[in-house]
Image (cartoon, rainbow, N blue to C red; front, side, top):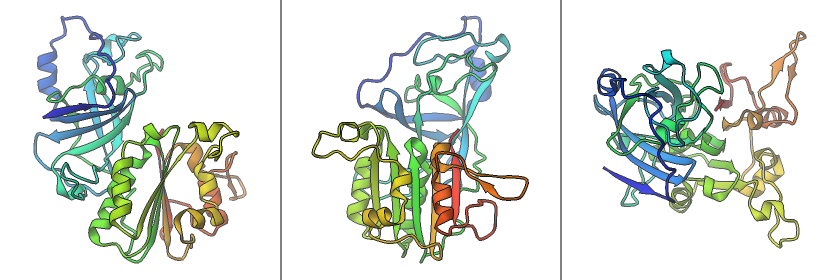
Length: 332
C-alpha cells in the first residue's frame, strides 16, 4: 500500500468523540473494506482506491455504491460543529459513482474489469457536523483516512446510468462537471475496451485545470484511440477572466460547447439524435432538468441547461422512457 500527495494534504484534526467510545469494537462491527491508496490531487480533491473484504465486486460501469464511516471517526479539518449524541456511534453514509484509473502504473490501458479495487473521485465538503441537522458530512472523514484504514463499502452496487442502450455503431457524448467525470471515465474505458466503432466525445468543465484529476490519462486516451476525443473546459483560469489576454476565451460552460456548430468545431462531428446517445453527470444547473406543468408541457429552468439544448436539437430527454437517447445523473 502507498499514498501519493500532490500537493501536501490537509492537516488531520482531532477526533470528535471522547475516548469512552469503543472505536475498535465499532469498526469491527461495521467495516468491511480497506483503503488501498489515496492520491491528493489537491487539498480538496482526492482519488481513493478501496478493496472489499470479500474480493472483487461485480458491477456495470456508470453505477454507484455507498461509502460510510462512523460518526466517531476524526475529520481532516478538525472537530467542527457538534454531532448529536445518538449519531456518534452510527455510520455516516453517502453514494459515490465508481471511477476508473484508465491506465495502470505501466501506462497500460485498463477498464473496470481489469482490477480488483474500486476507485472513487471525491471533492471535500468541509461544512460543520451540525450545519444540517442529522446530516453530518462524510467527506471530512474520508479525507482523514490513510492507506490501510478501514471503512464500510456496500457490496450492493446499483444504478441505471449505464451503457445498456449503447450499440457498437452509436456515437456517444459524455458531458460532466467536476467529479461527475468519474462514471464517464469508467463507461468510456469499457466502450474502448470492447472496440467500440462509433465516435466518443468526452467533455468536462471545472473551475481550474488543477481540478481535473485525470487530465494526463485523458491525453493518453486521445493519443491511443482515434475515435475518442476528450476536452477540458474551465471557468476561472486567467484566460477565462482577463479579456486583455491574447488567449482570452471567456468562461467556458458546456452549454456553449453543446451548440451544434460549436460541438462540430470542437470534436469534428455533428450531433445527430438518430445515432447519438448523450450522458450528463454533475451540477444540476448544467443538466437543467425540466418539469411538466398542468398542461403536460415541459418547463425548463433558467438559465438553460443541456437538456433544453438537446431537446431543441431533437433528442429524447426523458431518462425513464424507452428509446431515450439522453441519460443524466445529478450529483446533489
